[in-house]
Structure formats: C-alpha cells, structure tokens
Length: 445
Image 1 (cartoon, rainbow, N blue to C red):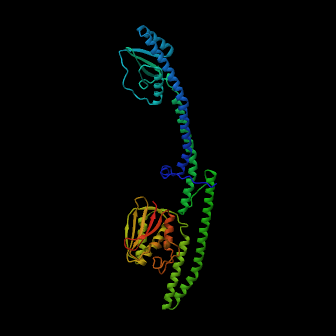
Image 2: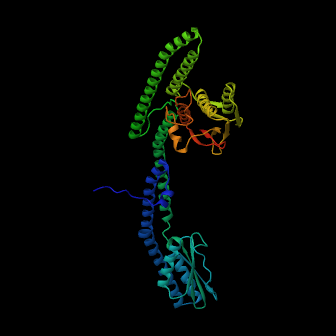
C-alpha cells in the first residue's frame, strides 16, 4: 500500500519551528508535555477530586450534626457543651453569633473546583442557608449557617475538606518535566551542533577556504561528514589537476610565442608584420584568460581589506590605460575577499564597459541589510534581459553583446561571478540608469 504524505495546514506550519534543534526539541517535549498533562488530569479527576469529595462530605456531615444539635437545644449551656464536644472530637471551632445574618459577598477561590465540591456536600446535608469562605485564612475554612436567632459560625481545618497534598504532586510533575526537558536539550544540542559544524565547514569550503573539520555526532552525521571530506578532497584534486594542466599548456605555448615575437622583432617592419604582431598579442591575452579562469581562487587567502582603496586602485589602473571613469565610492568600507582575484574581476567588468560605452561609472556603497555593493554602469548597448544568464557561461560570445570584443574569449563575466560566489556573494546583471548595462557585485558583510 503506497504511503501518503500527511499535509500540515499552512497556518500550523507557520507556528512550527524552522530549525532542526527546535523541531527535535518539539518531537521530544511535546509528547512528554501531553503525557504529563494527561497524568495530572487523571490524578485530579480520578484521585484528588474523589478524595476531596469524600472529605467534604465528611465535614458536611459533622456540620449538619452540629446544626441539628443546636436546633435540638439552642440554650447557651447546650451551645457551650456542643462547642466543647466539637472541639475535642471533631476539631471544629463553633460559636453562636446572635442576631447576625449571612454575608452577601463571596470571594472566589483559586481552585474553584474544590469550592464546588464543598458547596455540593453542604447543600446535600443542610436544609439551612449557609455561606463559607476558603480564602481568608490559610489553614482554616470559615463556614456559617443561618439558624433561628442568628448565625452558627464554624471554623474547620482546611485538610478536613481538601486533599492538601495535591500541590506536592503538581510540583513533582513540574520538576520532572523540567528535568526531562533539560536532559533533552543537552542531548539534542550536542547532535545539532555536529550538523552545524558540518554546514559551517561546507560553507567555508564553498568560499574557497580549507577548514579544519573532524566528524562528530551520531553515526549518520559522521557518515555525512566523512562523505563531505571525501568530496572536498576529490574537488581539490580536480582543481589542482586542472590548474596544473592549464599551467603546463600555457608554459608550452608561451615558448613558441616568445620565439615568434623575437623573430618578428628582428624582421623588417611591414604592414603584414604589424598584423601578425596583433595576432600574437591576442593569442597571449587568450592564454592569460584561460589560465586565470582555470586557476580561479586557488592559492589566494581571504583577507580583510579596505574595499574603497582597492576599487580606487583598479580604477586608477584603468585610467592610466586611457579610460575615463566616473566614481561614487563610499570611503572606509572594509570586507573580506581575495584582493588579486577581486582586482582581476573588477578590471574585466570595467574593460567591458570601456570597450562598449562612452560613459562608465563605478559605484561602491554599503547595503542596509549588511554587506557591500560594487556596481559598474555604462551607457552602451547592453545585453537583452533574456541573455543575462547566457552571458555568464564560460566562452560565451553573444552576438551584439558585451562579451564580444577583439581580445576577449568570453570569460570575463564567468571569472567575476566565480569570484563573487566564492566569497558568499553574487554578480547580477540589470539595466543601468545610464541606459546600458549594470554589473553589480554583491559582497557579504
């Protein structure tokens, strides 16, 4: 029989905790709480209420006897004798208040169910009007019965009407619940912490760091951690092999290129020679871009840098190459990044803007939610919105796009996005206020 999923109402989902720690705690605490409530309810209903009812009935019987004895002989001597007998045998304090009436006000008790039990027992045993108060005195109950000529006031010990040990039971239940909850929190926190360490290590590795991590926690969590470590080693080995391959290819290609450049420098200058030198320069630039893309973030550590100064330095380098760049840079912004990788990525974005637009503006500003935005705007032709994602693909050269230039091989945006995502941020494209393209690097705080 196929299993069906139990759908939780959306309103209830919003009330449920979202963390693993909260949900695990709920799984343990909720059944314990329900069990404790059920046991407490059963105790009150089946035991405490029953015992209290019997005690109240016994007290009501004694009071009915006292009222009947008074009505049989209301003389002062009989009342005095009745009080002595009630005090010695029944622990009741009886006094006759001549000409008095029953009070009209009644103060409610915290345990209304117990008052109802005593009220029912007195109503069943007495024909006379009565009134009682369980709140005025801590150890006694004040009971008054209307009789001929006044009120018979009776003080009875509280434990003669109520099972007074109920609060001790409740206290033990509360202590047991708190103890079980504390133990559950300690064990769950220990297990969840192992998962949190695994998530932190995975996040750090995703940013290009090499975290020190040892498997902890339950067997399943350790298995996941060991699988992560094995995956990390495979990825690192793959990156190292790719970088070594590209470095080797780059080295092998640079040797004949250097010889060709030397031979051209020694040859007679002519128009064809200048074209060949341009082709060689383009080939050398392509090799540099291939190697930069293959190298990625390898080898460079993350540092806390003054982003404002770094961006101004990149802009100054571009201006020395003949570009005119507007800047809006908020000073004193610090963030964690790989300086050389960031410099290369920002330079690529600026070069793309300069190659396709008349105006280029670089903006650095903090985000209200934390982090820093570095935007490169221009007034060029831009890229259609449906081609934004395609522009990030390595070696992509869009027709009439920003990736198509004389020297580029379609790696500039890919390198810049890899840099941003490696830091936990992102690179997004949008329409610029200048009319062209906006490339926005979103860096974490």
